Image (cartoon, rainbow, N blue to C red; front, side, top):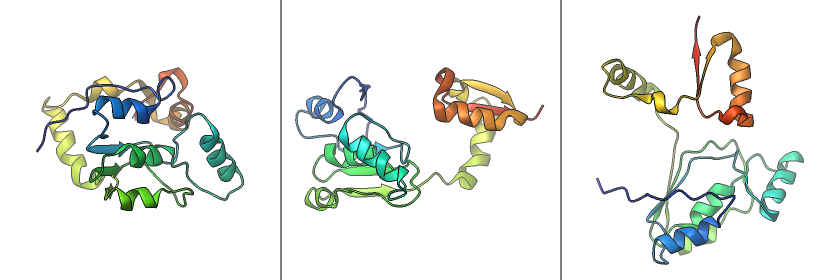
Length: 165
């Protein structure tokens, strides 16, 4: 397995992601890009407004902003992995860029049933500590509230753990 070279965080609200990635890679673009956001992507500018309006009119189910950005930024011959959730149809998909840049698209959700038991066992043995990602712990009865906190990014919510009691 190759080395992971990602050492910089790029804030799309402050920087143009495409320009920043080209600068960080000497103008060629990253070898691989990951869309981990999916249909909940948001950004600034006319393309974001376009997707929001199409969603509101039920003409598009998803906002593929992060996917478009990954395809645009990835180097020729690179790989775009799509782990973000998509629910249906997207508009303005840059298929020409995918073909002309000979990109490999690797989509797929985590195989939860395959990995759940071995990961939980590693957590129980203390080999993995996932506590750094947990921002909120709520009782199970507050699951709906926890989900809404996550969706609205209220109180910097990133990951909610629900407890039975």
